[in-house]
Length: 101
Image (cartoon, rainbow, N blue to C red):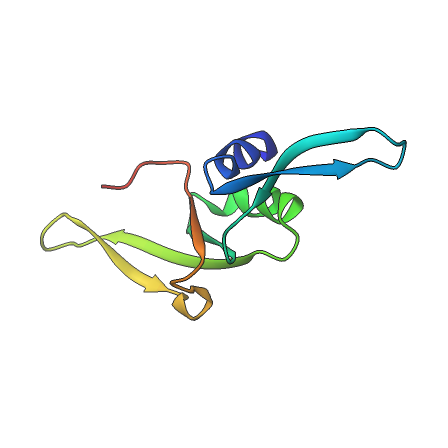
């Protein structure tokens, strides 16, 4: 899971930067140029990715969304959210192991 999270983070905006390693050589990499990262976990599917995201991004905020099928229409709908964690100025990473349309 960690490799999947690391790959997903490469799609976030970044700018080139050079880091001096403790052994002396310089390493060319990228520095995140956004304001913040918020993970959004789809309950019952994406919760398995939370530990990997927390391991890669130490201070990440994680919101949760529960999507259930509407018994009347058969369509998926948002049943519950913890949106107080979400910030519109942050980049969002949706964590789900299934595709919900």
